[in-house]
Length: 112
Image (cartoon, rainbow, N blue to C red; front, side, top):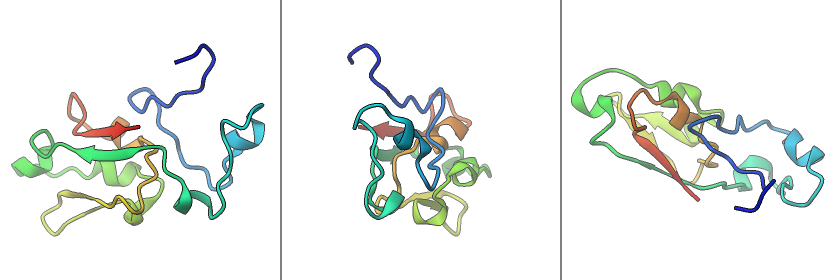
């Protein structure tokens, strides 16, 4: 990565997916732009879940990843058993769920 290049590190802080993307408005270059169609047309990465790490697959209740998601049910929800269900078509790759995850390392990984 080049010096000064913006980078999202969801383990430190994810993107909160502001509806108007103020980061793009203040970006001095075209590195960040508001896509036509807003967040529904934007993807920062692809989310993957490791069910072997996720505590809900071992019978514990959680759901913090779902609560942390600024996109909501379009990106991640819970099935009837209380386990996370990723919805790639709605996930923008903001990483907020990764930071909220209680497992170490996180049960969720973002691939750029």
